[in-house]
Image (cartoon, rainbow, N blue to C red):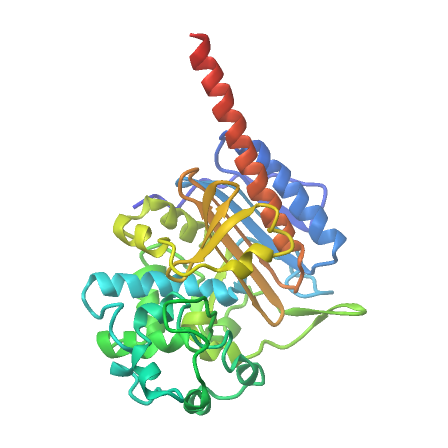
Length: 392
C-alpha cells in the first residue's frame, strides 16, 4: 500500500480564503499551478461559496487546495478535510464494490434482478425477468431515464416507489441502450446485502474507506450531519447563492448518491484507481470497471465538453470518455446544493477531482479545460522526445 502520510508544505497566499498544498514536481506541475489560479478566480468570479480540488499523478499529490467558506457569510473556511456530499460520484464506489463481489463469486452480472428482488416487476412480466445485475450497474436497463426520480426529488419513500415500476414499459431491450438511473441503480444494495450479510454502508467502509484510509468518508445523512467540518449546501437563485437545508431524499439511494467525503479522501480514491493499491482495487477490477459498455451519445452534447469528446460510454459505475484521443474515466454528481467531479487518465497516470458547495456550471468548464491542457502538454512532451531521439 502507498504511504498516505505525506509531509505537508503550506504555501502562504495573499487570499486568506484559499489554501494549497503541493507534494511533487512533474511535467504537469505548471498545469497544476495554473489550474489552482483558475479554480480560485472562477469560483470567486461566480460567487461560489466554497470548494476544493486535488490533482494527483501516480501515487503523489501534485496540488490540493480549498477555497471559500463552508457556509455563505460564515467565518469557517473550507479546508482539505471539509466533507461534501459526492452525489452521483457515489456510483464509482458502488461499481467497484459490486465488481469486487462478482470476482468473489457472491453473484454474477448475468443473474436476473428478480432473483434478489422478487417484488420487482414491470408492465411486461417477460421484460421484468430480462433485467440483470450487469444492466443495473452499467446503466442499460432499458427503463426511461431517471425513472421516478421526480418522486424521489419530492422526498417520496423508496418502499412506495418500487411498486410503481410495475406500471413501466421498457424503451429498449435491456443492454441495448443507455438508460441513466438512480433508483434502479441502487437495486444493487439489496443484492449486496443479501449475499454478504452486511449493510451496504458497512461493507463500503470495510472494503474501501478503511483500507484506503479515507478517514472522513461516510455514507448517509446521519453521518454527514454528525461531521463538524462539513460544507453547507447552496442553491443558485436570481439574487445569488442561498443556503438551504441538507435534503434526505437522495440519501435513500446509497449506491447512487449516498457517499460523503473530503477532497483529501478523493485524492486517495484517485490514487487507488490509478493502480497504486492493488490489494484494494485489483488490476483485473480496474480493467473491468472502465471497460466501455453501452454508448452514451447524450454525453457528446455536453456544453463545455462537446468540443473535446470523440466518444462516450458507461462502464461499471464510471463513464468512459474518448477525450481528444485519450481514455478518460469520469463521473460527475449533483444533488441539491452540491456538485462534484472526479476523473483520471490511466495512460497518463493523472487524476483530478473537484467539490463545490454551490450549484454552478463553472465546474464543468474547469474540468474540460484542465484535461484539454493536460493532453496538449503530453502531446508537446511526446513531440519533444521524438525530436531528441531523431537528433541522436
